Length: 259
Image: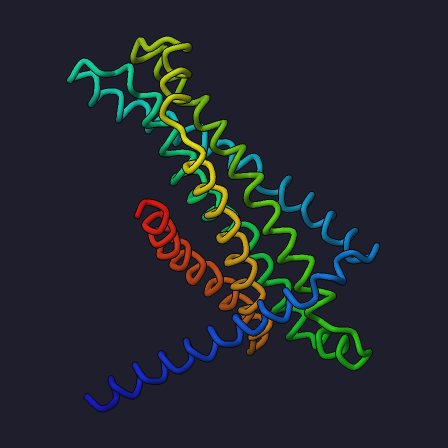
């Protein structure tokens, strides 16, 4: 019994320490935002934006397309039993723009980009490259963390918008060819149901998710220990922690906008 309590206490202590480190790292990164206006930092950030977008766009598009098709098929069949299949447009549009678009985009970026950031910084930590930057009086936060955090924060809402649009196209395809709902009826119903608050909620979620993924990835990378094995563990922890935070924060953001 005592061992179990000690183990739980150690886990909670390590979690609190890591959380504090990540919050301090985020605050320090935000304090360095004015340095983003320099030519070198701006170029690095734009390069990372391009890499993150091109590396995740295809997967995001495929997942979004079939998510929209699944939503339209399942929702449409249920509505068809009630003779209300013409309302499928609002279900697909609101679900993708408000909830599913930001959520699935964040999960894809976590698996593809967040884990990569953790592994990249973890490798630099193990090989003492980060210590070398400090010796040369170069801030690792300004040189490494700032471009990654800003780039992922910008890329996430962009990919979320594309995911929502592509998912709606998939929903239109299924609604038209499998449910007999016309293109114009789907579009009009979707536009009638969508509100500015839905769009704001989705975009706000995507920004929060982007900051979260980047912060967690950088934190786990900088806290890496134990050689190559530690790098793999850091990437795995970054994915697990980001997934949990995305789910929890997504609920509370939705709750705050709906109440």
